[in-house]
Length: 234
Image (cartoon, rainbow, N blue to C red; front, side):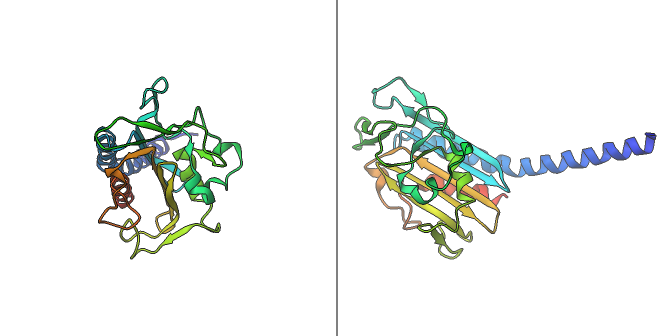
């Protein structure tokens, strides 16, 4: 039998649970807004045609945002938006991209075209969507999920907390460039979190090395900074 006290106790428990859920969401609200602005500004600067970032925490996606065009930036096709689910050439992340084989890692929709551009020039197609020979095609959401399961694979990179691109955070995964796409996918074991990001092309100035860390270039620096802000809020 339900008593008034039991009902009130149950409602109180639900309220506390909802409060805790809101607290977690509130803690990420400002960092998430900052991360979105960094991604938007990166694309609007015309340094890259498209960029995106996904962050997972304890098996759940807590941030996913992308800006720019997956196709059509050079007028070669109808314009299509780049999203966290858009597949792209993941050749630089081969140790991670080769690991998943089940349907949960299958790309959705057409793969992204990769571009290059001289500063002040127009975007030029470097590789048509789906034409990277021998490469795997995965979206950022899938790569972030894969990063949490492949830390013991050969070929992955490990950055200790004192040498990490995200200061104080140990990272295990992979980053690199292939066909003009700069991307990264890492597991942060101490935080139970994963990050994955990519740009689908760069201008010449975007390929310049950042002063903040040897693995960064100007085009990926905002994505590393966005990931750092989000991980600090977990």
